[in-house]
Image 1 (cartoon, rainbow, N blue to C red):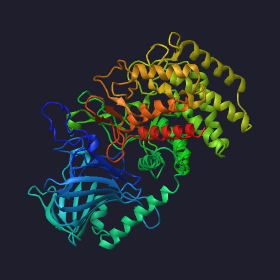
Image 2: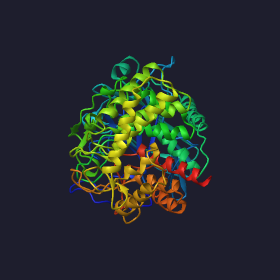
Image 3: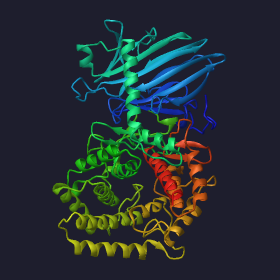
Image 4: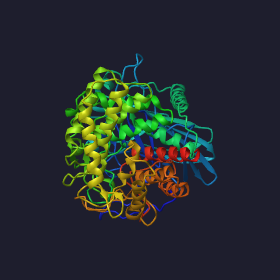
Length: 620
């Protein structure tokens, strides 16, 4: 099956053009890790036991060496995909002439031990059911551990299950489908005919090899697997009840909230920016980054947005994770962390994988962790401000942390930084960063007053006034009357659309109205989508439009009372979703295909924020 867009895209010479497109994938997750499944029935991305672990199935980044788990009809069947019962259990209906079958894929939630203690075991279930007639299926389980470097040692255990082990990683495979080793004995294969009424289950459980040696059995009775699936679906149904949003695109908002929930690492409350690494922003140009970490900015947006639709527990969990990870001291703060709170994320290149459609290099780690991004302090103070408004005022320890953040904003606001987009060129005086420094001071003063906390109020007020004066003097294009990207550069930056969200300026202030118009004029692609900026950033290649930016524009227009224009921009942004309602980071307006890491949390957050803005505008 192909999606509505043509399954064709220019690929670096010598690479396999049969690689599914990014939009051909769906995601399943268990709040520890996530898998991407193509519309051809192949699991082409799964890192175990965590989002940021090495890949076990990595064909997404190398069709030949990455590893995959295929389960699909042998013939030319049509696939229709959906998610089951408000969950992220992926259901694929295969239609082959008059015959039909269904495959249900999910990562089981609730995999702690009987005492509720976290462990590394992860369980992937694939259930194939015959609905009408007969369909011949093929199955191939070919893990390639450590980003494609290691082929598994395959052996059959007592009881008939198979183990697949390499290094410190292992899988136990149990299936009602008859399996046999390939000629190379590095994968399991099967070809079978499924009849109406048949239901066959395949369970893969991730374990450490030492655990497999001690006990190679798994809880694989059919009724136990079915019960685990029902429990997982019930967990999703229960969580859905927390979503209280009622407005434009109600089901879409609930779905985006589920995607954001799926990006959450339950043991710590961290949210990854995306579940992938190195899906390119421009094919073959090296714009490939690892997004399997937790950014202060994204988590702050998530906390603000999800709390507005009812997911308060997740909102607070993000906040607590960020506060813990920063170790209570502004000087120790990073702009991103590992999902367990790790601080070292050295950026390296992996030579065992060729990259998506040959777009190398494949990177793990992220060098942006060492950048100075002054907006991070403002995001954290805003996070605390919003919690205060919900009744969670800072205690003594947290106030000391906030003091250090606000002091940093007061003392360093006039330094250049890398800005919202993690600029890899020379640092600049980015206007968005200055506004967030102003916001840290402004919210800090409000917290000090409302919580009756001691603070250097005079110093903060003086700094706040200086920041505003600098922005109004150097951060506004006097000819156009709009904000500019940086003091040094007069171009536009879509992050400027976020300025009213921290109350630096009203949404309908003349400067914001001019900024909104300028963004549309300067950053709009011919098809109506929005680029984040249009200038040389020191990297090769021309990236696509940035999905979140189009939703930001829709939000701005809605809050400015321009509902009709907001709807047009919103609808165009919505058209970048795939058939499962998933958004990537970027979109190529020429080829009409997704780019960048996927699914992208920031895009789904911006989608929700735009819907909230349109709902609030409609009610006034």
